[in-house]
Length: 356
Image 1 (spheres, helix red, strand yellow):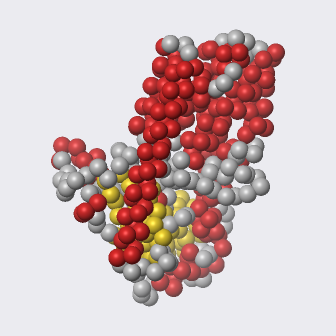
Image 2: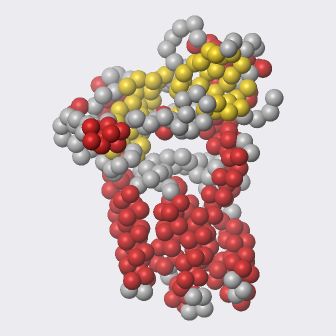
Image 3: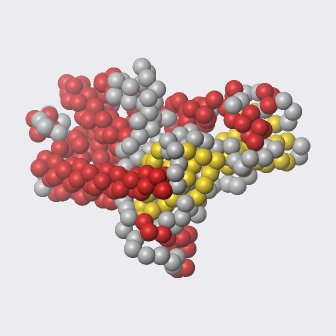
């Protein structure tokens, strides 16, 4: 979820909390809003770890300890204590701790409904649930949160903040219903195609809550379709909207689905053994743990060196370069190859990872 929505959601939760009137009689409203919004942003401080090691960041650190329900009270205590000192209001440190806890919990909840996965039980478990009901940037979700915050500030009552949370909950129920509809389309496709033991999952997509990515998993093969549950016919892109128009029309009506096929290791051939070896390389363990729907992105050969690149279907969007493209590059024995990443929004600019 984007930072602005995280901070606003934190404020909304704080303003809707039971007993907030009693607490805020001791802490001014502007201070409570500042503390709640800041605490709601705090878990993403783990982004600083990206500069140390991008592969370890996506595999282990992002949405890890700072996003843990187990550790949330400890983070809240540390943040609340810090705010009470910074604001020179030490007598209300417990109030600040409570506000921080609400902000932290709002952030964790906002991330749980996306697809990345959140280690809510860290450090005791690396389990990463991710509902996938909501796209990471959802303008409807953000608008509901913003409206709830504005209304609660305008009429200075927790009632409107709670109304905002209620509307938000109803919106999430709608998304769950739509997700189930899209998932059932994948299950129907698997039955018709006689794909034994195949599983179906639908992931929220940009622009509309009716847009879904359906992934049918059949062993190491994937069948993928993009559906708009609101579309009724063939949609033609409007040239005036450019890539945004093409992105919108990539999601087709349920009766006109275009199923694409992907393979974890690419098409059968001489390179398959090389691709499998690159995937199983010891130094590529981080990406193996990160990816949920890994597929071969491409194989490059430049200046006597070979690079085998992989990506994750969760982040494959029409008209956009996938953000997560990691691979192994080298020559000779695969054990001597080195992990790399392709920098975001570039076609070929690669960055070495780890140490030689």
